[in-house]
Image (cartoon, rainbow, N blue to C red; front, side, top):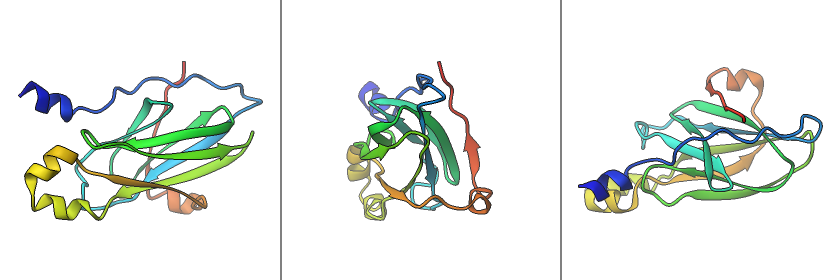
Length: 144
């Protein structure tokens, strides 16, 4: 039973290191609404550390140092989905995440779902308009 509980836990969310205001980039990660895995919280992070949890129609905007940076999304016991993004100083990059359509088949086989968890996609996309982001709830990031 303890192993099952550990497998279902998310990474702990920790504050990001505050980048230099004159030398930083912004990454916006947003989660598209979907019934598929809609009740599953999604951990978002970079460099192996989580900095936010997202639910359906939520987004997080985080300032990070520029350069090549790996970002990930992970739902509980599933393997993380990663994407490396090249960021320039002052640049804003947007990443979209949504439930993988393959999750629907796993629902029919609960042992498979328990073993592999819900998967999510992660892709870099053109940033949506501010009007489009108005449909989403912002999740704040803590910095240290």
